[in-house]
Image: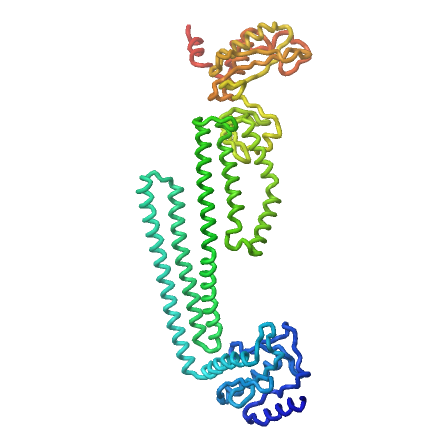
Length: 549
């Protein structure tokens, strides 16, 4: 067998002409070794892949065999002695020839056994590719063909620039047209009552759609221009053809994927529509509960809004679980990886949010608080302006807007001055300390008289005076009054404290706060003629009485 292989090599060497360097004679099978896939080499010429080499023959690796074949082809092209390409199979060896010169030979070890390749199939494919590569090599050495390709590329480049400019101008005109049409239609449909933010959002969305369409057209045009210019020159023609094939393959793949995803997308759309219908029904029900049209035992007008949001969120979550398997790409590893990443991020960052959310639900369903109530949360006094999922907003009586986290409100005691014993009024209280030498009945009468002088203090229910403690040096009294629900507690308290001081000064009774150690020689009071000492100015009616002769 060795003699047969050597005879073939000798006959091939004698058959080659002097002008072309022959390929190395094929070695016996025992001297041919199949290398790992990582060491295989794709033999290319003029940027075109010709065939794949996987075997080492004698000491020549696939890279050495490809380099030797490239050198032979270069000499043939330089000498302009390029004949027809043939690929005969002799004694189980494929000879790739150009004219009478052997360029490369392939053994069964070079075949892809998993793909069930044969030498005949490999020879047909390699001969066709090498024929095209040699034609482009001859074209590259002809100046007139290069000049023609350059002129074509320049002309198409000018057309491309002109087309881009026209697209930009058309985009501006289309955007302005869409903006004007959207405004006109919105005014006609809404009767001129559309909100500015909604109008701007709709027109901006239409402009984005138009601009995105023109950008896509510009990208496709650029892709076609690059592919055309590359195909005008022999050396870059394979790149241009590859770009075109990739574009067509990509568009075909997108079209096929869309066609396959249409049934699943329709099912997802049906799930979304059904969920929206159910949510619309539940929203209508809870709106009726909030208005008082429907009365139920398990919900009320105070909790209807929160219940509506919770049920809507639960329905959307249920719909997402059902629709997830039908979303295109949901089964891919990339989609699963992104889902896991988002889940981890949400889990790590949502601990505080869940705490606030559960605290908000506690405030809502405990029904101890509602918008408009005057409350004290810690050191903050104000009126509730908004009850959110995560925080509570209070408008203080000084006009400040304070946001208190729901967890803070739940974690400490809160006083609701509005919702007291089911009454519609707001309770207000203050304390004074009076010595034991003053009769408690007199103190109660003075505090009641001061409350009756104060505006916005209700007569029904009447003011109440309670003795809260018998301290070491004085008695602690508490005055409780009722205000209208719309009254400002801070301003009313200021007027009430002023009237209390006036009432006690009129009767010559000393208020014992702050603490004292011994009784003074005379009561620590302010005489009536000193009530408006400078720089204070008396009211007009008092000033008019003083000026009378």
